[in-house]
Image (cartoon, rainbow, N blue to C red; front, top):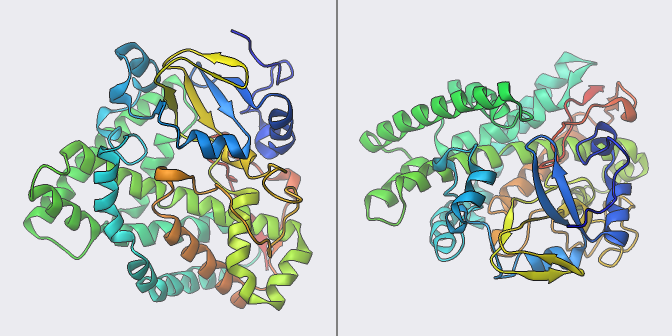
Length: 406
């Protein structure tokens, strides 16, 4: 099998300089290797990667692919998912229709436009409190630690019904789940998963005995009314909502603020015209969004893509960040433009697996930047942008920290 000569010797998609700026590499991939075979050095696995916008849009709707591990041969499932607890493989991102349709219809009831809009006053209050606390610390405050991470975790924890005193524990568990793979980190992850499941089971039991006005209680009610939601599905859905509900939003806020600071003329446009904030958030999702590599999909049959023969059960991923810089889909794709319209990015996914929490993430980001402009109109970086450290993950792109001065 031919391997695309993408990288210099010793270089990978996970190399620090690529993490800091993957876009020149993605440009080359779109132009020369629109379907490239990638080796994940952390897990020792291979997958194919699509980077063109049209390919991303068509592939996620292609019925010849599956992302449900239960539909794979045992050897393939063990190779790609053997390190992951089975109880975390029955959520919205890892099932196909009709299971996906059933599960999404249940969870979607908590993410209706009306329900999300009702959260506006509470999210505004959280933003104001966090920004005031961060501002009081003065120069050197870390935007990610003091604001970007606390905001979405408070919001999603309150929606789910996670007690306030347990939020820091959830943050510690998820950091362990997504640490770069190694023998030591995998053992710690197994321990964290076990403690996570034990915590959830205890919380589920409390909600069964004493239901509250929260999403966990609602999901348990659905489960007890019939067989529409299995025990594994309940655990997996809560896990996905909790983790997906704040990690990606937190890094969107950090990445977005960084680009405003790197493009002062665009920041000034927002100061002069607050009505541009919603379109600015969409541009942040496109230009510097969090979602990078999709979850794994698997060919259900032999096929040919871009002249490459893909045997059945080959793993394929799409690259949302690369697709959102495709010049065939976006004029001046490498220009950060807070007033860009139209902006049909795929930064929240596409098709039936479009991010269910996108309306909530949008509202959190819009309110965050509205309050930021009001209370801290002129933040400054305390480090040069090129000295900022980026997370080693290619799954979701984000900074390790974002130190500011006011």
